[in-house]
Length: 182
Image (cartoon, rainbow, N blue to C red; front, side, top):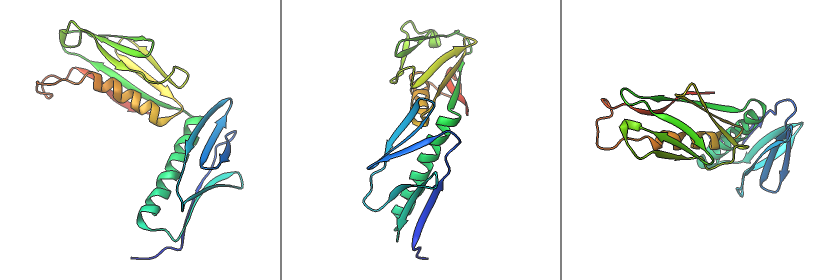
C-alpha cells in the first residue's frame, strides 16, 4: 500500500459565508444564521487558509484518512446549508382511506392511516426556526432547513411514524415516503 505523507482537503466557502474556529468548534455564519459543529481529534486539524477552510493530517493512517474526508464533507454540507439550504419532499400515499396531515406544535399528526381510529404522531424535535415542516396540497410534506442532519432526521421520523407491521409491504403501500431531496 502506498504511503501518503499528508492529506489536505480544501473547502471553499460560498460568498458571504464567514467562518470562526474556537478550539475544536467550527462555526459558519451568513445573514444572521449560523451552524456550529465540533471537530475533535488529536491528529487532524481544521484551520482557515486564504478565506477557505482546510482539513489537514500529516502521515495519515487509513481511519484518519477516512475521517479527514468525512470532516471535509461535513464542512461542505454546512456551507451548502447556509448558502442554499436543504429541502426534503415527502408524499402521503393511500389507496382507500384518505389520510389527513396536520402540524401541531412539535408533532405531525397523521389521521386515518389504514382507517385506524387512533392518530399516529411523528416527533418534530427541533424548533421551526431550525427545521420548517409545511403541508402542501393535503398530501405533500416539505421539510426544510439549513442543517442537513436535522432535516434528514425529521423526514425519517415522519416516514417511520407510518411504518406498517404485520402486513405485506408490497400490497399495503400506504404511508408517507421521501420522494425528493434537494
